[in-house]
Image (cartoon, rainbow, N blue to C red; front, side):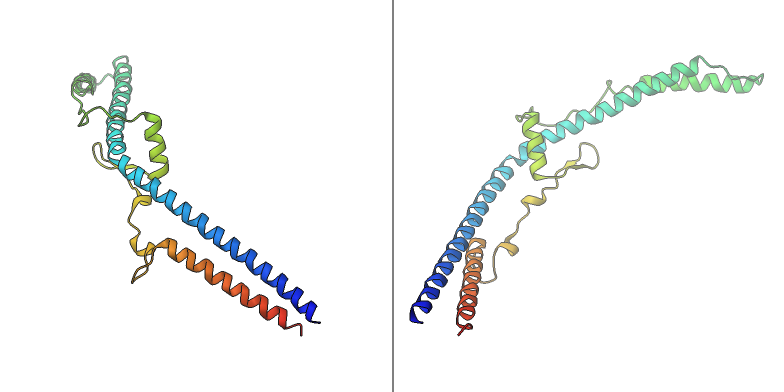
Length: 199
């Protein structure tokens, strides 16, 4: 009888040790992950001004491209208008049509986006396009407002002091370790109760 109890105790202690070791390993893995994530955030924040600057230059190029595309399409439209003539004997309508085509041609000439377009500020961006793409994909969801209003929404870089710290102190690493210890202690109690409930 005593040998049987001793065997059960040995198995129980072995299981307790195994679970404790696993809990400690998980807590350490979580701690290392948190450290690596904090370092990634630090690097991303250090790179943010350069990435935003690159984004502003991209926005300027996109705006010029949009203006150029529209201007080219309007030019083709005006050329089509020049080849048309109102199918009417109304002289006043013909005159109005001709005036409109002339005005449209003058408008096209004066609105050429290459005559005057706004250049982005600052020096040439020192990031490559792949670097900028990678940073943007990992850290933010960009959206545009206004002229060259490339505004980064860096949700992942927002402060999280309230969620990472308990009131009164204690880092996230300490909390994770405490949680692992509590889980292990609960399993230990369960094992002992299960073992002795057989007698």
